[in-house]
Length: 371
Image 1 (cartoon, rainbow, N blue to C red):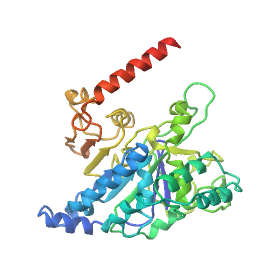
Image 2 (image 1 turned 90 degrees about the horizontal axis):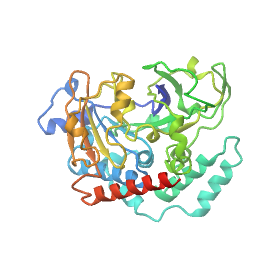
Image 3 (image 1 turned 60 degrees about the horizontal axis):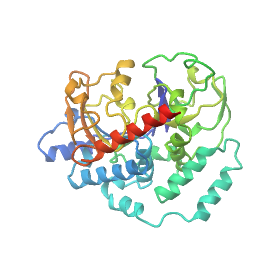
Image 4 (image 1 turned 90 degrees about the vertical axis):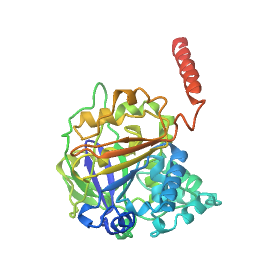
C-alpha cells in the first residue's frame, strides 16, 4: 500500500496490480473490443454524502453487476461516504462477483456495543488517539455494520478481478493569518508506504515504526461528521493527487513536518475527480454518480487551477446546476476523459426540491441579516 501526494490531495493505493482481462472479456461480449490494447480505462467515482452515498454506491455497483457492466471497471474511487462502502466491500476478496453479501450486511443487525467500546478502549491507550477514532468506530460499527480490522496493506494481495480501489483524503493545513504558508508545485508526485502511516520519521529516516492503522480508523479519516462540528474547516484546505513507490523512503517535501493530518477529501471536491484527471491513469471514461446535494460542477474550478484536462461544459448546462437532469454525457477530446454524470438530486427524482431549496436560502438570508 502506498500514499501518493500531489497538489495536497492524498490518494491511498494498494500495491497490487490492475487487470484488463475482465474488462476485455466483458466488453468483447458486447462486440465492442477484441484487443487488450484497445480496452478503455473506465473508472467509477463515488461521491460524498454520508450514509446516503455509502448505500448509493453499493446500489450503483449492484445494478452494474446486474447489467453485466461491473467487470468493465478498472478503477473504483471515492471520497467521504462512498469510501465507507469501499472499505467494507474490499473486506470480501470476491465482492465483485457477489454483491448480495454486501447488501445483506448493510441490512444486518450491526456490531455489538461491547466490541466497539473495546476497540476504542485499546485505541485510547495510544499516543495519537483522537476524535477521528470515535468517528471511525461510529461509521464502521453503526453504519457499515462491521468492525473491519484489516490493514490497508492487506489489499496489496487482493483479487485483481476487483476494480482497483482509490481512497481520497486531504491534508489539513494550520495557519495563523492569511493564505496557507508555503507553496505547492502543481503536478508533483510523491510517494510513501501507507503501512508506515502513524510511524515517526525525521529527515526522511524511519525513527520508530508503529502499528499500521486499520480500516476502522481510516473510515474515521473519511468521515464527514467533522464537517458538522467544524464548518469553518473548509478554509483550511487546498488541492493535491497520488501513485506507487517500492522503497520505504520519504520524499523531501514530506520531511518538513512531524505529522500529517488527513481529512475527508469531500471538503475540497465532493466527487473523487482529482486523483483521476491527467496523464497518470490515462482515464478514457469517468462514470460519476453524485449522491450529495452539493455544488454540481465544483471540479471545473479545480481542473482550471491545476491545469488538468476536463471536457468543456456548455454554458446552458451550467445554468442547470441547481436543477439538473438525471444524466449528462460530456464527451472528452484529446487527453480529456469522457464523463457520464448522474446526479441523484435531479428534476425527475426531486420535483419539489427546488422550492424547498429556495425557502431554505431565504431563511438563511434572514438569519444572516438578523445577526
